[in-house]
Image (cartoon, rainbow over all chains, first blue to last red):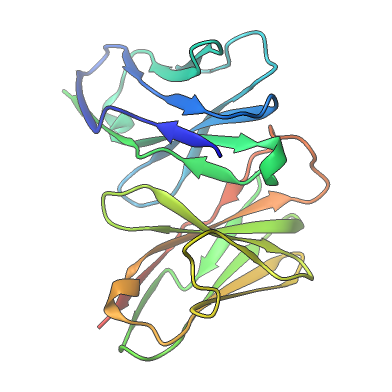
Length: 115
Length: 119
């Protein structure tokens, strides 16, 4: 069974600083994908970045990068040069090929950016 | 980009009534749709996987007779909360997976969510 763990319920970061949101996962599958989503107060789920288990390089999307350490089963999200608009809930999620690609979410981290 | 809509966005109902929530993929076909529930300050919990033309697959602990799912077409899935009670009050979110995609990389497209309040 797949499992996602986010150990940081909340974080405060100064504007323009970089921030790392932690995520560890557990799976017995060899083929899986890792996602990060942002959820502002409006409730919409905004896809940020994806990392496949067979991808050799860390994924990057603009200011977002995913620090994928397969042996440690971690998939931390790094946001560079944080902005006030980055304040939101962030969810790490995983999908296993054997589980019909359904996405399971971690408990989330509430990120607050200080001006 | 792919767009998924949900209707209604807000619903308030009396205890004991049934509420139907629609999830539509507006510009793509979705063989598979997913329904999630999110309580305040909590994560999204997968309720069920909805497959077009077949019965939904429910996650453990989700009452299939309570939460009826119908995926009648490639662009529409509905979730009906039957005999709703105050504990069913929650944020319900659907997502749709584009048909013809076989890899995990294919993003699920999320709807904007429906807030249900049962009085």
